[in-house]
Image (cartoon, rainbow, N blue to C red; front, side):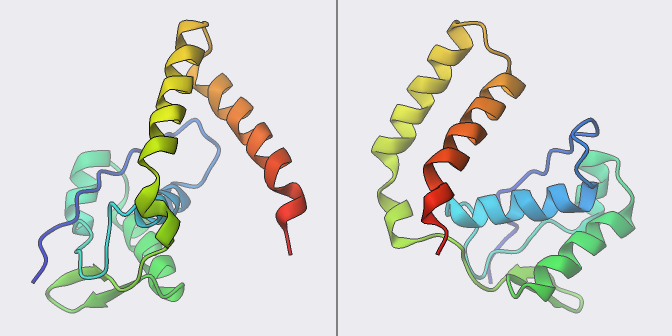
Length: 135
């Protein structure tokens, strides 16, 4: 049986994004990046509450949403387990792209950009790049 997943939720109370949605989004990102795989157990709600100081019901709401989307399943007395991934076959070969992006992020930091500036810039470029890709 798989042990606890290597995911630590980070809650940004200033983001304007509902806390439970931050947990859902971070879980999906971990699935896309291959950090979580089918069979991995998500942290117990109690562990998330201790690490983030959020309400236990918020964690349970996020886990219910992930379950509704078919990404995880709760097993009574055992925990919540990943049932499928969101990663593509191409993601396994992303090391060169990841290295380029990390280099770009370091250059942005050296140029004096704040994390929020980098995020906004990246999102704008990403949206522009993929806007014609919606089928």
